[in-house]
Image 1 (cartoon, one colour):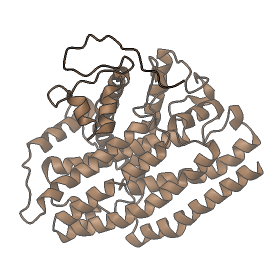
Image 2: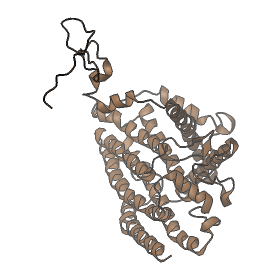
Image 3: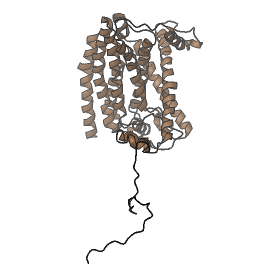
Image 4: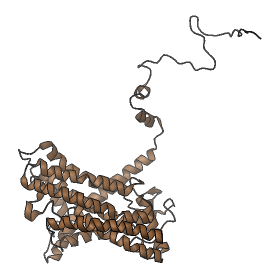
Length: 413
């Protein structure tokens, strides 16, 4: 055929310019002045510019912010103050005393008065301390306690929104990973204070909290094996339909298999709650503080709001630990016998059902908090060697045996 020259195409291009291919876009010469900020940042921050280029779902962001503000700042922090008041009132009743009754009705405003007192006290920092870590330690104690609340479902649904800040599929792992950071705040407080009393409290805290973290983690493995889930919302939904972990009296839990599996779950509950006492430094496991022996332990040198953060962090950890215990073993927000339980985790829930579920969750949490308080003012403190022996010689082995027992029962049943 030979080479056939292409037909000449008339062009409207200006003289002296290159011809333009009709099948190709014209790419103008881009300069930093006319590129815009997104293309300039793309080589440096590809993931950030990709996220900024995509359509952002502002509905999800606004809903998350509202849940954070309401659950953390308007509910959890006031519950911390009320827990302090309840502890003083319950301890007074146990010891046949009056307790706080001067500030406000029944002394309810005593926590507000204490907060004002901490704010107005002199914030004294000793000269010999390591100031950076000395100031950092209280934040490392308070912040992880509040962060762990992000994955705990405090209700079913309200106006179509899940009542959980972050619906993660690794909820218990997130809780244990973040809460384990609390030990750094206590250790740094003891070390940076440059005081032998504070340092001894920090050393005790290191050994105690790390020891009981192992038992705490092992205690929930039987529950995960039984439910086959790491999503706390789905675990609660399963308990709402088929019976709570410690109360399998309806649904599929009302069977021989449900009653048999309740045995390792009860063992897990005992280990979990005892380890939670040790993790939150509550009596009879308050060896990191141990006021009668160590002059308040790791926070001896702290005053004003820095001391208050340690105090509030302990109670915030107790509240979140109570919420986790309720979620794992007492059905979370669900009512007994499947009352008002949604058909599935994604089913629509009337708004008044959602409010009832939120109220049920906080009622259960308050009950567990009162249990924490009563135990504190009932049992004497363990000796340090008894504390460590209980954690390593008994709970560690029992928790491992309980995991094996659960696996065998599941295989047989």
